[in-house]
Length: 394
Ligand SMILES: Nc1ncnc2c1ncn2[C@@H]1O[C@H](COP(=O)(O)OP(=O)(O)O)[C@@H](O)[C@H]1O
Ligand SMILES: [Mg+2]
Image 1 (tube, helix red, strand yellow):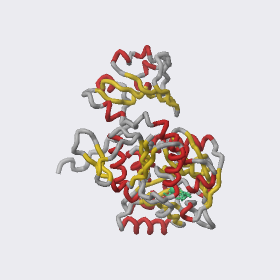
Image 2 (cartoon, helix red, strand yellow):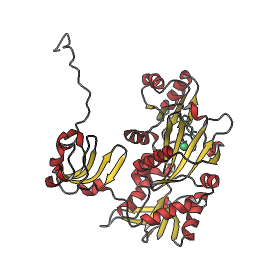
Image 3 (cartoon, protein in one colour):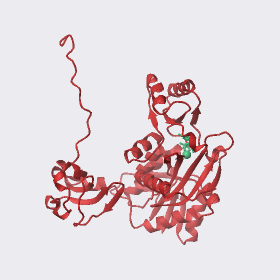
Image 4 (cartoon, helix red, strand yellow):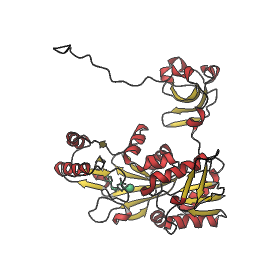
């Protein structure tokens, strides 16, 4: 395959290893500086220029977008997606993962366990938020920090309040997060490629530091991950739309707590700790996927008027429980079932003989009008009827 690694750091360990692994496998690989692309929207077909010349054809890209150029970098990746060039990490995935709040919102929607987190802006909301996540000591995080910079442990509520107020006064947004003391300055980095963890390590913070980042002096050791940790890592990466990701987890008393999902994980620490060819695993995965460009299904399937994708719940169509998909009448109503979600399992292309259960959810494509009646009602808070004010009119 012909592969472009998008990176501004051709001499960094990770870039060099990816290039070497691709060459060893007989692929044609180039490292292209992300900032030297020009996005061309003038022609009929989406196009890209590199260093002033039209870009030649590539089968795949591997984006390594640094946090300082997220906006432009993801625009370039999106352009490759529009050109049907395979990328393991989508533009959407990269930008969602980069913002710690956005990532937490997405992951918590899918029942991924995370440290209790709050996000506030109003001064009066700071103290209650600290109390809600468990009080002091409490962790304060800048939304877009990396390498442990911008992660602070505040020993007392008063100190936490002062730090947060200071950051707010300089227009910085911060997360307030429960300090997971039982992890004792250690965390797990799982390197996810496709649907498996190819390597994992434990990072241990230096001295009395609580941040275990290698850039903060943390040391690394290989670990054999418990399947529960593997599953949490793979699910988190997949939910974020990332097929190559470094998932950071704390070891909580009740199992893994996902902290963040990195879309450009460094390879040096994990290859050194595990002695595994992680770069090679990434290249092999990309080569296997080249025939399947990442497609925005929703975007592509909503082009014909009146048709779209929706998630239907069997629960809100109780007459379906116990029936097979074939007997459900969906097909007759011009509704195609793409996947069936049952608990944490997903059955793709479910067959006609599958019997529906009460808590099943069906991802369907079809006429929106036909599907509307089966879409679960939004959970609403019950509106309280208030007392009539003393002066109803004035
Ligand atoms: N809630 C927490 N409780 C305990 N330790 C934490 C918590 N959040 C972060 N840490 C420690 O700080 C490190 C950096 O935090 P992280 O959110 O991964 O930020 P960064 O993006 O800068 O790496 C983690 O690797 C972990 O060791
Ligand atoms: Mg981290």
